[in-house]
Amino acid sequence: MKIVIIGTGYVGLVTGACLADLGNEVICYDIDKKKIKQLQSSDAPIYEPGLKRILRNLNISKKANTAAAMRKNKVLELGSITFTSDPEEAIRNGKIIFITVGTPQQKDGNVDLSFVKSAARTIGKFLNGYAVIVNKSTVPVGTARLVKKIICGYHNKNFDVVSNPEFLKEGNAIKDFFNPERIIIGAESKKAKRIINNLYQPFSCPILNTSLETSEMIKYASNAFLATKISFINEIANVCEKVGADIKGVSQGMGMDSRIGESFLKAGLGYGGSCFPKDIKALHNIALSNNYRFKLLKAVIQVNNDQRKLLAKKVKKMLGGLKNKKICLWGLSFKPNTDDFRESAAIDLIKLFQKEGAAISAYDPKVNYEEFTNKNNFRNKINFHQDKYAAIKNRHALVIVTEWSEFKKADLGKIKKLLKKPVIIDGRNIYEIGKMRELGFRYLSVGR
Image (cartoon, rainbow, N blue to C red; front, side):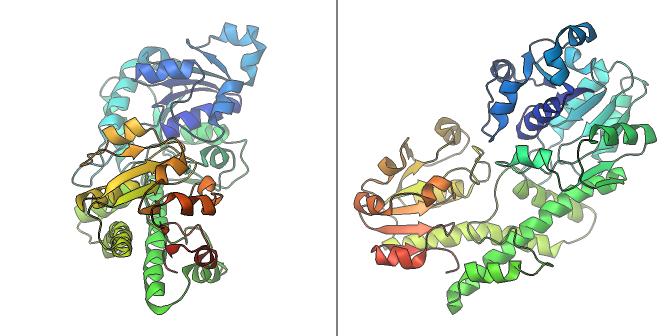
């Protein structure tokens, strides 16, 4: 199939690369010319395990492939991908057009749909014949109909709009794409429904065909429920600290119940990233705008915000104050196996520590330090390091923020020698309490 992807962020680039890997002809369009040039050189602008390998195996061209080129070049039969910043070149070739642009959060908590609207206007200008427009971005209920209305404002050509939310976890997105647990398709047109169902024929998972509104709500409801599990287990962890229970054992026991399941029951610093924080607030605002007070979601948001403050208090208590203390953070991304630091716990912790007068050093294996600094308003300079051990030298404490596997395998004896004081505050519970005591660390974790 001839597929167009509008937006080459985490969702768009993974979706485009994987669909091409399945044998489709894919054109990825983005207004960012620098990013497009980078992609044309087979260089992914984001870190996602497995993505570079897929891009290297695909035929990447700078111009959309014609039918004649497809016949002549057998390599293209295995799938091809084109990256372009020319909207006309992209849209005119598409039979299925995915909108995968960002839907950031506004200051009032509502969703900013400006990129979605812009994508719809671009489609309206250059659409050439029938196409299925697929909303894959996470959007409020009613957005599919809004997209249809915008496109209709440009011409009366035949097209359909479908809602097809993504369920890709950053750091595991490639695996998630090829091994989906379910596919949701919201459509009114039988023709559009048939085309999108055919697109997903290679997958053996259940496909739920439903209405536009139900499809849009499923994504928000799913993320809200998972965020609720995270906030719930963090509340239980805080109680465990008071009564002497171990949250790891509690989570394990709860997870053995098939009605509950073991996923999203890891106590720590709460949820972050590009999805959960904005989606939970968006759903809360959707409820409010429809005269419903979603009390549970309000509590979920508050618990998540408080979790970072509680850890900062632990560090302050452990060090007898934060003024003039040197603190190292291991991990800046919101989760391991990604370079995405949006809504990361590290951002909140750094700001809390700097407000109290602490000096910060940091290490992360994938985060771009310049971008991390430029996109966050920090009081003082952060000393970033390319080596995790160099980052902790002569520091009063080490704070574990992200559970990267290399931190779990770190040389604890070396850490103890390098730190000014053998103090570790573990926000992800990656070390065993007994071992840390044996080694002579002053060690605090979450819910243990």
